[in-house]
Amino acid sequence: MIETEKTSKSPVHLGLILDGNRRWAKNNHLTTMEGHKAGYLNLKKIIKIAKKHNIQYISAFVFSNENWKRGNNEVKNLMKLFSWILKHEVKEISKEGIRLRVIGSKLRIGKALVKAIHDAEEVTKDNTKGTLLLCLDYGGQQEIVEATKRIVESGVSPKDITADLISQNLDMPGIPPLDLIIRTSGEHRLSNFMLWESAYSELFFVNKLWPDFSEANFESILKKYSKIKRNFGK
Image 1 (spheres, rainbow, N blue to C red):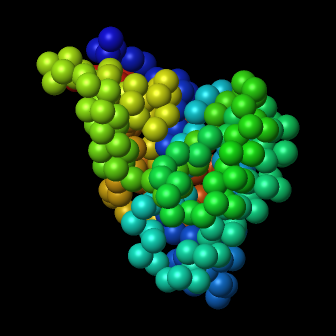
Image 2: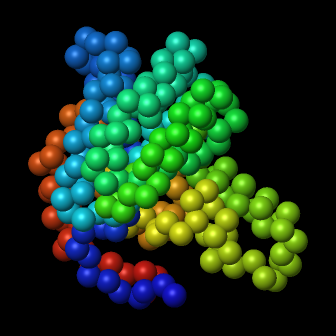
């Protein structure tokens, strides 16, 4: 049942649209990949701060299903970076007690990366101090399309299709809706990020590139969020 009113404290589920790595690299006379690496290091920092605030779920939009349109070298290097993170950083993530999950299509990312995802998820599967969802080759519209296909294939009658049923057939069923979404780089749109889960999210758009998004910026948003009186359709 949807709540009609809620006074916010810390969000349960935080969404991050990590925008601006490439522009940050260009502004600092660095390569594109150095920008993406700086973006990952900043994500690590923000995750630790979120944990202190008892934020239970973080969904980070790291590669959309539209990002395949980028240059071949950038895409290839990004896949290598994701693989390195999943293979070499997973122990640190697990030490923090965080469970790692990766959502999105796995059809184009290659067998080696699929295996790295599986292994990382296995290593962290019993952790209970928070969940990090990496949205990789992900699109919100496609997630809803795939959920619809599952429902149709299961033979459910149209009259029995409900919002709860669709939620149960999304990429990660059981994950609570997004309470707060932060997007950096000055853009004011969701760009196909978790469209179903963001129905009642509070949205904060920041005029900073993601690697420059600081602890102070994050703390300021959390403070503002804590004062919001959220109304759900009221």
